[in-house]
Image 1 (cartoon, rainbow, N blue to C red):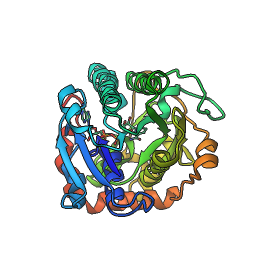
Image 2 (image 1 turned 120 degrees about the vertical axis):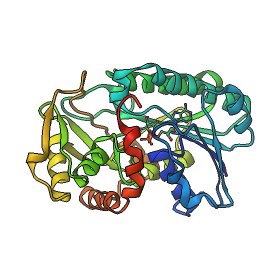
Image 3 (image 1 turned 45 degrees about the horizontal axis):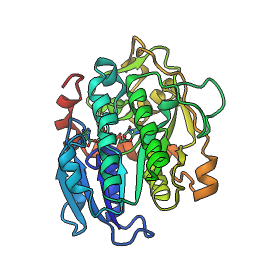
Image 4 (image 1 turned 30 degrees about the horizontal axis):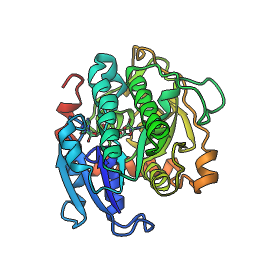
Length: 329
Ligand SMILES: NC(=O)c1ccc[n+]([C@@H]2O[C@H](COP(=O)([O-])OP(=O)(O)OC[C@H]3O[C@@H](n4cnc5c(N)ncnc54)[C@H](O)[C@@H]3O)[C@@H](O)[C@H]2O)c1
């Protein structure tokens, strides 16, 4: 199977590529993977070093908004797995335009190329944030979208566009929406790697508002396993939720991270809440469980401990990225 992976030098995309090419998904034997990635501030080839010499691996540096380039890499692909995006809510609050052009226009460029060249499956990787906020209970896949941040609005736009290509053109599109990912190789701007790298460096950590915002945590390996299931077995035109099953307030998460890093609450600095901060996200995952046999397999305590260990052992990965992590870089 020839698979084009956009955003494959980022956190989740590179995990998917490393797993694909190291035989984690035996039902996709001998995959040929082309990564298309612009190497923005959050993408780094270091993430792909373990597979760089694999005979089934090709890297193309380029932008998904580049119509000609995309038109040259899509022909011959059996599937597209589309991760490339501007992905950080705080950055979208500072400036929405790159989110609109990459997440919406870039997705349209890819969909057009997939349609023109008769690509088979197109997996569009999205987020629970497209639904807004939910005080109790969990969203199902037919929940109307009500995004609150510019990031979430741009992802909602791209989701609807992807689904429209199924309905309008019959393109074989599957949309996945997942909860908050964690694991190794996550750029140190998102809360877990931000807090861990700051705590390991002896710095304090900024906790938004009252710390009561609730997120469901999903190990990146479980997320990628769900994407692999959707790629092979998802029904065209359908949305599948991929969740982890561990809901925590940011305050609870902070306590766990302090403990894992051997630090106390004096290292926590309360900061003004994020504008428009969604209070809680929660995905019902029955559909992907029943149709595709998805089960998150990594207990949060185990996954978090391994993640903290990874950051402790791999300062050479994250230290060079810290300059880029500052907003506006
Ligand atoms: N991280 C999470 O918790 C999470 C949760 C839900 C959904 N998602 C979605 O998963 C996907 C991957 O997220 P991530 O956390 O790995 O993000 P990331 O920021 O680590 O990686 C994004 C990658 O896309 C590349 N990219 C950005 N703009 C590009 C462009 N115009 N052309 C080509 N490449 C471009 C970057 O260089 C980077 O390698 C995104 O679509 C995101 O919306 C992430």
